[in-house]
Image (cartoon, rainbow, N blue to C red):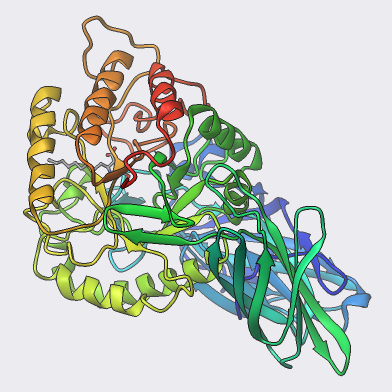
Length: 601
Ligand code: E9O
């Protein structure tokens, strides 16, 4: 129940099981039959958290698609006897079945969101235990992210994603062993009202038993500024320090669960006092207009692939601060929870995206997909169940982060056919009440889904546009033709009665670092700058453009293809996080644009 981030305090213990695990491929899916649920011989020693792929030096292992196993021994001390014992997997890509001491505990689907396994009755106290996972990284049309699993002529299984990022697989985030009280706090949420000299935190807390709660709010000096009692209530803060974009301030909210006058569980978390709203063209934080600048990103780095790496994240945050960014999109999946904690602390806004990507056969055609409407497929009902499930988990996991600005429910779906309409009607209806803060919900539209073509413009609260004039061939490769095409489309939005902000959530050009050419040619560092400059000119001439997030913060690994030279090179930084010339260009603009650029005066 719930997805609260693990903590250690007087009542709870959190221990990471990271490090070397046993690992083994299971191409014939015979692990269970062979008794691997209690461990296996001849293991490969595999780091966790990590994607297994790039450690290997042979192609078949790197590209392995199918079942594979992880195993690790762990110890549960006697003094935990009265606790509930859980394992929490930050990300098992893409599906997993968990066994403890040979006993099947649970299965989970969805490689970018956490899940817990209650192992209280399966473990032996004061003894060594073993956890094994049977995992699988195949892609299917009825799963997120969407793709196919092909069988090559030689019998080899291979994933064929309907998206370009590499299908990195494995235990990509930390595994936690948690001991928590049997009667415990398992969820909470907050909403806010703020004004000049007062802020109110409306809270709601959930526990497995009991309904007696003591709640307090402390400032960054540890001073208690408000208290309350009960399962829901208000914390009123006089003269609050609000959470502001790039000027964050975090309060600590503490919940105590009280039974017969005794505290039996406690959970604390850092929250930010702020409101979020979309009003007309404006994106408002604390009732003030903010203009977004930042990036689409990936969790991607050398050696460990898609693994969360605190070192890479520290560097990325510093790069974003250096360049003057104030936001990013967690393209194309919810990131590790530590990313959100970082962003909370740094005052960076996140458009939080569910792993619904590849929902377009036509766009996938350059990757080997088909030319048909994605939402006509017989996989759609099954896909929808998983989709809404993961939207629920994402919102459940991330709703309390001040950094989260909006929910992106899909990336570049095919919204230009009639069959998309019932799908998104259902998705937007079913997700309406999930976020107590009612943050804006949206999806990105790529260039097949223009103002003219898309049949789903009624759904988003703000629009995210992925546009590639001057790169992909929609309006020709010429930057000048691209600009004309882009302006023609934006004129249509302008002349419509739609009154919502547009954020450019992708645009850019593949750029080989170090390639210089005068005059510019495609792939040169000069071309990337000229293209960005064209976009900036267009953004500046439309009032309703309220954000710019070029693709991508950094170069990243992709599927192989004749358009990819060792990955997608649209990074403003290289894969090892050094600047291309465009970084200095963007820094100049972004550090001089006011936060409230274009605010209604
Ligand atoms: C999604 C992102 O994950 N958008 C893609 C990015 C890219 O660089 C990818 O990395 O490829 C762009 C979609 C462009 C579609 C072009 C279709 C051609 C239109 C005629």
